[in-house]
Image (cartoon, rainbow, N blue to C red; front, side):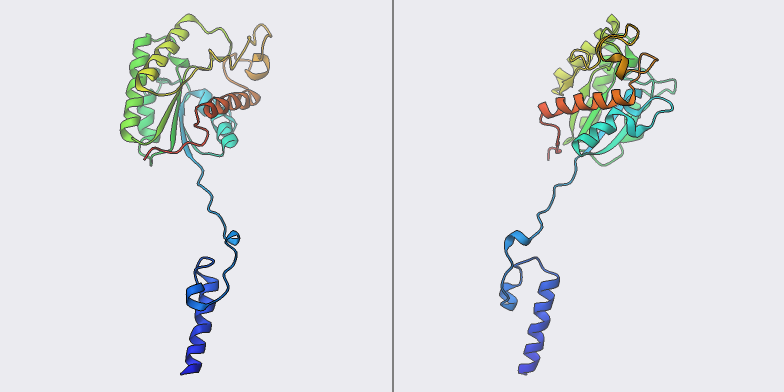
Length: 247
């Protein structure tokens, strides 16, 4: 009987060393515990962040999605990222395919599990539409996202422009988006007021010649990296660089 007990004790010690957490077997086997510092500390998971936007966010035709500012921001901040949207679209603008942001949200993002953060970036293609109409589209989208994902944090980015002097209607649309964000309690980031792009490629002034393509609209690869650095800085200031969904 004593030999059976000895074999059972040896088997129990081997099981403890191979399976249970360090220190979990002392009461069973009488073995000396390893120092607590030997245990691996769990690492928090990377935040899941979704973007919804126009060609600035998803990339214009012929560009690589991994080169966009959205992807570059995710790399800077260590996020898992899902990028939705389509070139030419906005809160009202459909990009010729009948889908403004609220419908793109449904078809591309809204059916997915809730992210920690949703960043909506747009308004550039809406500058020809009446600001109240743009504001209504933004409100519809943000309220829909909040209802779908009550714990997800939201951020609204106003129009990104290829020069520091957008036309007056673009500024009016930007102001309408700011008002909606303020009313809903959503952080608003304003690339125009913050002068992410300065000068103009046409006049060879500011940072535009380096960061904007010859079309005068879309960023170069370096421009996307610049936008990502500016956005990362803004999000750090909002304590959203490492977002976590509200539970």
